[in-house]
Image (cartoon, rainbow, N blue to C red; front, side):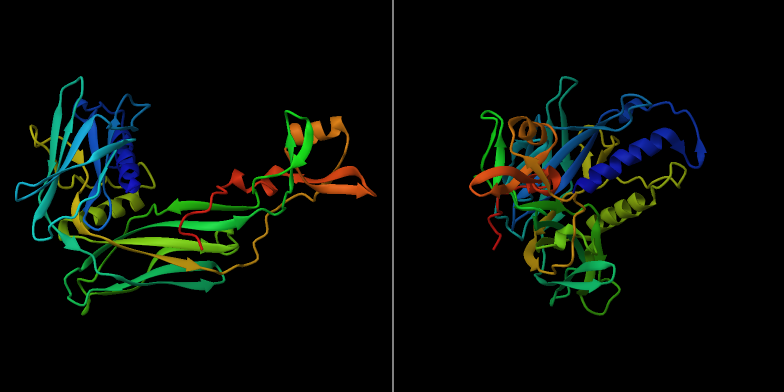
Length: 378
């Protein structure tokens, strides 16, 4: 939920530079110089992950500098006295894999060790809500591109509030295939042993994707758009995969994300209406009025992966291949400093007279992704 961090950094910036619609030179509030941002979900079906960061207001010219919080103890607690410690894995992230009793309620307790004084935070106990299954991931191709949708329903009519996150991966190819490389140590062209023609790249959702069936006769979501890919984008040039994770929210969690989404979308100008005072369900144990941002829910998420093959006419803009003379100075110049990569030899009988070559960004796919095939890839 990196969107929450992005949103709150923007909130701090807006609050620092504007008041309603009249700009002013603000006096920084010292109470907001160390604001904790908590993101995460207590998940009984997947990894429980809690991310901690702080926004430090250093000056009027440096108003929203995020800092990951690594010096913390994070524990999931249930209302029956059970404790589930999470492990810090760096960059402010704390994780653990547990099976939780769905009949209990859960919260997170956070203890932050700091030279300025230790702090303790706790979230409210929340009811464990299991997500129904995702029925399908569908797509529709138009002249503008591909739109991807999620479809789901709860036959028990108990979910009502839905939240989705996704991560996608796609295979793509270089425009030109190279069988050779330039060896700087030997100062000559040698056969290539690595693959720089086939690569993969991944991304993740950055929007807040939520929906409610509260005003519908059935607890059913049909064709809720979660992503769109412009026509001709290289994400659909070979094979595309999207993994969607679905969460069931309680009313307070949905309202928190809805307010977050609304304010994020409306913050196009410093003179827009002031953002809502979004605090969530996390509190400073010793100072109930202290500003803490975030909402921790609990339940069992559901996720599924869909592969989509719509290879359309993607064309990378590339200069035509160039023949580099097979001379030491020429190959050192083009392959050593000009960014060209040898493709294949140009022959005259048994003699190599030159090298068919292409610029690196059209030949080396690892400049845009990785040549390590994902474990889930077919």
